[in-house]
Image (cartoon, rainbow, N blue to C red):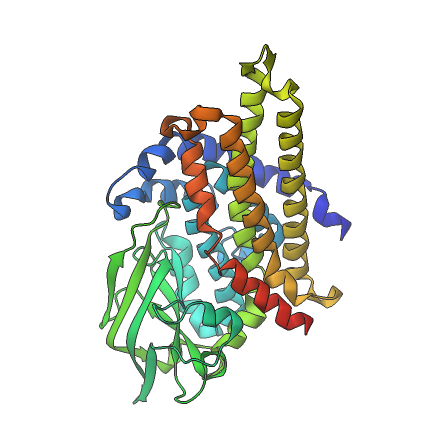
Length: 392
């Protein structure tokens, strides 16, 4: 386990590449993109294409599929670095990186032959997962026996899908979707749903509105609408009626990736506050020389280090579950990291005084971005209940 806390040479090289990408490509335009009134315009294909050119978009693919085979720990580190530049960029790529892992592990050999080369070769090929619905959201995390409203009915050679998903990250941008639909009537979504692979241009599948979010605006979340959409049997992932086994078996690092995303925002806020406190003079002394400010900065640093250690443990254990995987690691790291991030961005704003309230300083964006993960990837209270079930 000690290896999880020591960067190896490959990780250092990868992170240096990501930092350079963030500094040169993301940071110069993040603020301008965030301010676009139309949420769809907050996204940039140029950034995604340059992420592909840097090898980031495909890094979780195994070498035989054209990637570098990045493990979950390394991926969590990369996601944190991306989020330091912009949380939305991190979300777009984190979704794609983790779903690429699932495709390699959960898809059939025939499905991998069909989709992995297309994903590898198209610099604009993003991935999305369709779970959340207007009436079915937190039920997914605690497996409440409520069925999905999106249904898939058997027909010759496949399934006919009807329904709608919403709040879907990369919803209007992905080329391929992992869609969860109810396939067994009278059963809950936890044991009566099936996972399907759905291509963007499938007849009967359209994109609804792009949600106008408070923060994390680079990442477009959108509605997925299915009207008599035919999906072939060949596009079923795993077993019919056992869609949630796909998540249980192949999604253990998802929570750690979400935690790493919001941690990057907190790091950015802390670094801005530290720099401000070292240079801003009030009461005849630099802010950092005032005991109250110094104690706040120390607490912020402590929260960052603890959250990162928790994330790294969860990510490492996700790939080494034979060493005693604790299922609470699939729920709690994001809770802690998002709570820590919210406190850190709040303290950072207060340290800046009135300047922290000004948009051109950038802290108000970080505060809006941090707020996203109090809910994103699972409402915190729901995730605590999920973890509590494991304790029972």
